[in-house]
Amino acid sequence: MTTGPAAAIDRVALVVSDLDRAEDDYVKTFGAGVEQRDDIEPSVTRVLRIPHARGRRSLLRLGREPIELLEFKDSAGRPYPPDSTSTDIWFQHVAIIVNDMSRAYRQVMANPRFRPISRNGPVRLPDSSGGVTAFKFRDHDGHPLELLAFPEGRVPAEWRAADGTGVFLGVDHTAIAIRDTATSARFFMSVLGFSTGTRTENLGPEQDALDNVDDVRVSVTHMAPDLPAPRLELLHYHVGTRRPIPADTASNDITATHCVVRVASLDVTAVALRGHGIPLGHDDLMMLRGGKRAVLISGPDGHRFLVREE
Image 1: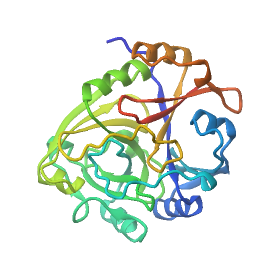
Image 2: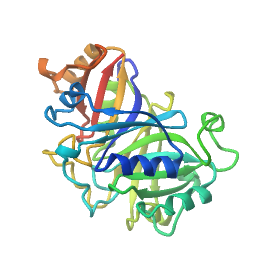
Image 3: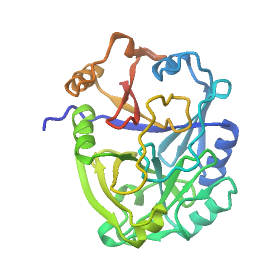
Image 4: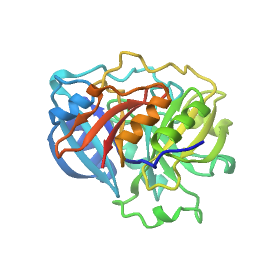
């Protein structure tokens, strides 16, 4: 398959119900720094297809990677579904690399607004699943997050050189639940130019404990391993509720996590989208502050990507 020029994920954006509280949680628990705090510009809400919404944003940095928090106080959307599982298609987590899982776990659980997904704390996955130690949990608004610690002697070079604060080194990837690996991989290869990397089949009691789902089996595909973090992972759960993203999900709903993606040319992206039967209309392309064009696109299962031309 021919792929377009590789895009790059700049950051993950989370919709929160209270910006001050969420910022406080991410700064005090993870050691993130606040880089910028301002109102959400109207051009961004137009791109996000909520033109009359108004809100505030906080751009954080954890290690080298940014995380964006968006609050739509006066035009708040729907909360995160309280009965969500890792297998629901709206699941999208942010994976944070740590250099000491025990300390990181204690810091997370010391925050009463965070609640675990994983059973009985961190889980050491088998070598067939990467051999990492992992722990999944949710923030106050329900967004899933994951802590990851590499086995001793197998830490990738980029994380050996990471400059995060304390035990939290940075954001390795964002992972999305999908219905079909081949369909999603084909989309991200052709539209964003991502290559496919390692694929694993994760199952067994360790994965059950990590996801808090019995008899779970998930096919994990790493996308664009050659690009800098944060990267993208595809999670094809073969069991569980696997509920789709509702068609009426709006960008101010708490579940409407999106990635901000940089591309060299939106014209190339538009051609690739047409190849998937998704033509971009004139009104889809918006001009951001500073004269950069941007468009909001959705992956095959409805996950959102704000694609910005650089």
